[in-house]
Image (cartoon, helix red, strand yellow):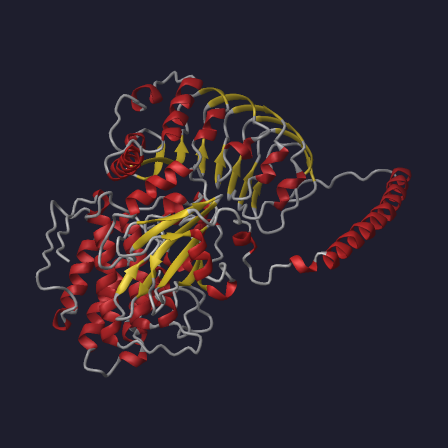
Length: 609
């Protein structure tokens, strides 16, 4: 019986590895989403009838549908849906909620009718652009739209919308464009908390700002009644507020012992699950349970945190035998247990000298923990930009890091099966072992994160330093591509050779407000590119290498993606610059195939490590 159970477990794990490493059909919910939309809408011009062919089940097949943009061309996960000017009829397709990673929706210039769903933000929770203009929608604008907190652009013009614009829309934190012209709207318009491009044209009943007539005030008696009511209400609210305040004050004093100074309340909540096993990929690592990880990290205390980012928080773990590991607690993810297991099956077998090895993982309640090999020299960002402001990295070490990181990223792009886009390349995700050999971390985690927590957040939130790594075309399309990743890596190369951060360039003039790439471009245009090189690197008999390196970096960040090299080419260029240092093994063979089109990922890297 025990043998039978073991064989069954082995077969299940083998099956998970096979389906995650081979050709998959992608996200079934997204396929169901598009199929349901096609069935729900009338398509008199047959745009969807002939393009949306669900009989073709090749890898990433829905990404070739008209109007469909995917997060990755080989992954059936819809990023944007652009069905403008197709003559579509029907009501708002509620089935769109099954496209759970959707960030852009354009249904403009069609003949859609009915009301805009009250729960629209539950249907498209991560939407950043919503265009329903030039249709036949009627009824009121849903108040629930104020819950679409990631909205950058909202266009509802040229419909038959009535009533008042919900004043709650004024609290949308990221809204930049708001248009409701040519409707039948009335009443006061919202007051936005920041500068927003608005259009209220041809709504005679609107008032209260942006060139509109002032809203009429009520008579004095009504005002007095309102004032009196407000005063009474204010007294009541004040008394209620005082009572509530006293309640929480007393509660805080009573439960002061329950404060969380160690920041590990979440870990203590896992009581009862400590005997859960940690699934290990490396036979050389001793078998572990969750209790071992908790003991090794001092119950995941804040004092053990060695890094944090959008994918999660990293803790230092010291086992009883002195072995040091890193444990990452993933941010809350939308992925199911099955999806998480499948992704772990893939990442557990992705091995390369320049990738941080995933040693194991653990699931306990809603927590997802990943176990990695420790990197004693931290990340490249902290080595280049230490707290004291003085980096000790010499040129040889910087070039070694560049060559190794380029090799690892090129392998992910062109040789790994399945091929992987990192989507968050920066100097923070390049870790350094005891010999300063670079290891790329966080690869493959983007698909486990909520859309707003991955590379999308660098654009939507606009508040991270990592914004300096984002390719200019991405801010327009929100589509990750290999050439966009080359741009991000090019910014890392610029960091290495200039010593500057991707934003807040210290050597630039005070009036300069751009990022590192824009500063380099300005110096290039003024024939002052030599001023960009880190002063600690010059006059060391390596000037020729520095300028060759800088040229490669500049080619990586060219505005036109088609003019940038592939990651295969970047690695070859850097390897040639560092040939005399013997950074790479002599028996390593690199063979590109076809025409080197990185967007098709047709190159091949054959590496014998």
